[in-house]
Length: 103
Image 1 (cartoon, rainbow, N blue to C red):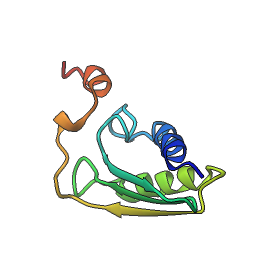
Image 2 (cartoon, rainbow, N blue to C red):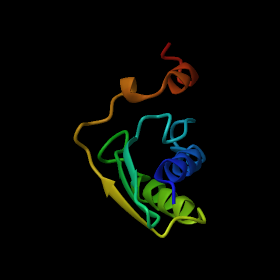
Image 3 (cartoon, one colour):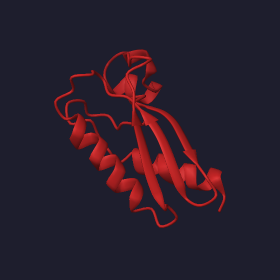
């Protein structure tokens, strides 16, 4: 299995998951720090949230897990939720910054 192709599929999937409080997907918002696929289809994902006390944290993490798990080539998903470094708006993509009126 091509790890880069699988990583691309994971990224495409992450662009379908939105923070319910911000109309931008979690990938473009800059919440995803690392995506590491292996040859067996196991995904190790490191992410953060906009704030440690995010009221919908469990929902977002669960939705990410479920959507990635639906990718045919994915065997398992491990999500590491971290808050270091803390998220800040400059981590968002240019597209997200435009959508949020930051540019």
